[in-house]
Length: 625
Image 1 (tube, rainbow, N blue to C red):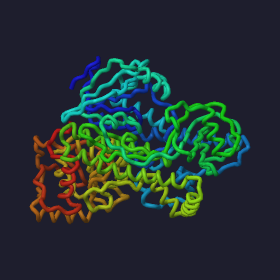
Image 2: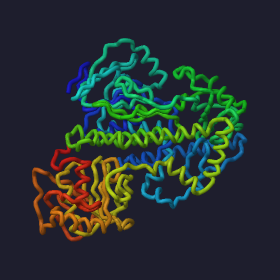
Image 3: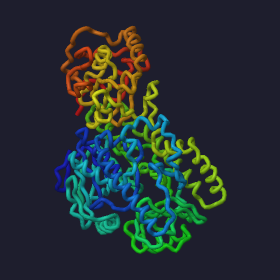
Image 4: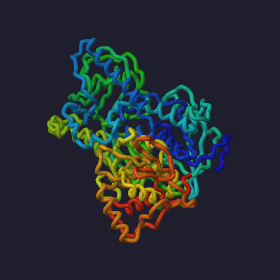
């Protein structure tokens, strides 16, 4: 691949947008040895206040890539700031408010009482330590992802904007130009101090500066709700028009004790105060803003806050502010040839419930390994098309979830009546648990082939006998075949199925005392269970496959074919974890050659495992890249 304009990068993928979605996708691709260039017109990360939390699928994604300890530290700091907010209110004479024992969220501004959450619900049990992390502001997350991208060697070019592209069957020619006043520094952490307003002003002054081109295999638009990539590629963007004007800001103010903490509904709209010192949010139902891009003034924020709160609170300084609406739209297909979309570029909606950031992180996790496999040439046919098939339904649900909240927040009698009905429901254990499960994302899954209840769901974070956990075996972005029995024949058959997937699937054997009914799991790189077998079903499957002329149980050692390669097999037992070219179990070492797959498969037996490997990881023996 070639470039012009003075840069020697030869990317497989160009990503437009260095927000959390673009950075997460870049990290996923780089983890699988894909060459990535990220283009960002802002010269420095945007410090505008944004989302304040991540949901369980997002926390699991970061956990599986080794970032959970850093997120836990961010959450600890955020909780400290919340405590400071409560102390400031009490010192100012506000009515003391009892802090919830853990973050539970809200629906349409109705707070979910954490004490009513049924913690015994099975939906909350499988996330492991990731289930304890949620209060992570987007700005902090973006910084962590930028650091991770730098560690992985991702090239992030700031002060550069995409101006056009030409897509062909074999690649994309991307046109770009520097933003006026920016140095366009190339490297993992290039850029200068600045924000959205400065970047926008610089962009307007760029004029017709001579640009450059990048020849790449693929282009992914992660450039936000008003995506240039989406517009230029001609993606349809159907949906519903906005009816609100919202503001979110960090300010300094006097008279804050007159404001209620948390979400408050009034005769003129909705406002929120906290959970951080100086954080305010207002929602008014008088239509979208006349000029979404006009500078946000102190007077505008103060007028909105006074109108929605009914107080004479005074804003003395604006630290950061943004406008938002409830525009709700989604592209029908996330891919058009060599051009793909992720995050807000593919779907927009109101920010209520904090779903947008998490939806985009899920897009990046789903797309990253599939695009990498396609680039390296070992993706099975149609793998990349499953990106839209799996992510579009979850995006459509989020749009409906946010629309429902807007309908309940309107300051009119019918909406307020509905609001009281929902408030009564939320005041029950069943109701709170239902809403928290929806907001936390633990319900999410994909409709994948297979009968086991874990199939298509986020893999449970199993703890193995050696103390390791499932998430720790996913850090390098490979798939994982986890064998959980002491039966040497099961271990031999698992090795046989996985032979030929070197660099794509790691095999780990061990015991899990907490889930004795499980024989094995096949986990995709994004953490979703592609196949699972119970102990009884695996044994049944052995017999069925043997009758069908499938996998044969040979004795002794068999040499793995050099042309097919060997999947790295790891053992997780009392002696720790080590890489070997076979499977170590309680009965010693066994290796295997591949045998023809059975034509008749049981739902959970060895034959079904072979099918699942081929479905998600392609033909055995293909180089992993």
